[in-house]
Image (cartoon, rainbow, N blue to C red; front, top):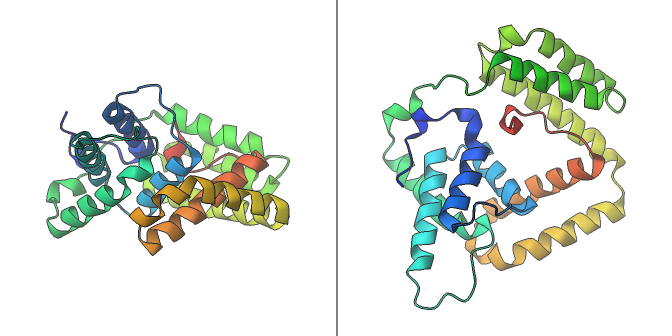
Length: 226
């Protein structure tokens, strides 16, 4: 199925769209993406890779895989598609589609936004009271921020960066070492398929995700509204 253009999708559906598209391309709707996969999606999002380029890259990678005479193993990671996604992003950059700049309306109602902010505020009330207080204030002003979600996302990014910095300062050397070992194990089969910059960004995102999960801290970005 040909994916819809970016302007028909909501910006904050990036993660969900990639996950569902990868599952369809793989032919297994119940397949769960790994922490490495989620970190890779986040590097694409942060690098400004258009959603359409990611979806096209996934299709191109699977088309190439299905064309092989000998398939030694199933595609078990989104990292398999990394090079194809990069190629599609470069093609789209060379031939930009002006329609992609059109904005789509929010895909979630105002009450969901308010509930999301309140939930994160409650989760952080003990460990990070200042961040929790800011989130509670944003929740109270949700109607105002609903009119400019990009600005709200910037505010949430700043709060998340502060939260990660605080969590990192409390992380033990043993925990960091184990996270790096896990990363190396998962990433080893794909190192030759990514650039140095891609690997650097992916390593950072993976380690941050691992840190937040181990610390039982929520993600604050609107991209994690599901």
